[in-house]
Structure formats: C-alpha cells, structure tokens
Length: 59
Ligand code: SF4
Image 1: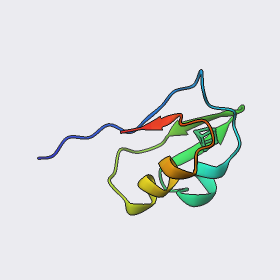
Image 2: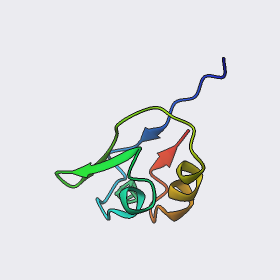
Image 3: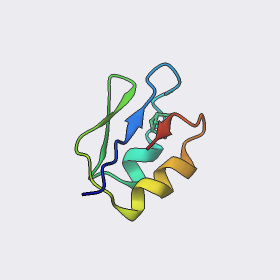
Image 4: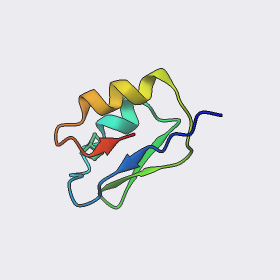
C-alpha cells in the first residue's frame, strides 16, 4: 500500500475556493478554510496543489 496524506496548512489557506472548484471530491472550503474530506490520490489533487495561490496544500 502506498500511503499518502493530503494536508492543508490552515495558517496559510486564505479560503479562495480554488481547490474545491478544481477537486471538489477531496476539498471542501468552510468557514474560510479548506478541509480534506477524504484521502484519495486523484489527478485533480495535483492540479489543486498547483492552483493554490499560497501553497497551502501538500501531500
Ligand atoms: S486553493 Fe489554497 S488558499 Fe485556496 S482554499 Fe484551497 S487551500 Fe485554501
């Protein structure tokens, strides 16, 4: 099993909503912060990482 952990640094996140727009299966923005709903390796996770304006997403 390959283990991976998608993380959002809430101190950096500005709640722009980009990750949720791009990868709504994984990210949910509530109360101005993105949350990871489920740990799953989808191609859109990488797109979300690249789209984040403040580099808050890592895995
Ligand atoms: S793209 Fe980045 S800054 Fe925008 S909501 Fe997602 S984690 Fe936060």
